[in-house]
Image (cartoon, rainbow, N blue to C red; front, side):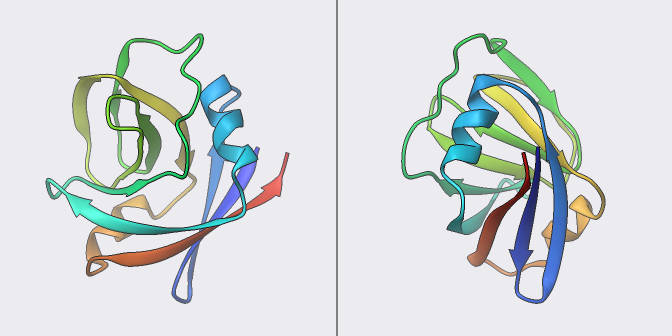
Length: 118
């Protein structure tokens, strides 16, 4: 599954995994999110509803460009820095290239997320 994240004039393509949580996220598209910086590591946003975590691991580590769901808070996280293992973090997919560029956006930023292909 491919999605496009649009911030201003910039577009980021991402490949999503086949997890139940990623499919729940895809079902919410298209949508506009307000991304805020968190811990100088990631951009986060609330989602309109919680995603299913059925069959997901208890947690994971994040790499630059990873798109993840943080189940304890019910929010989306897009990483522009690597991050160690976090309980409750579920990887949904990854930005194909340019994930580190997210650090340069002033907060909060509006981002549109669209499904490109299933």
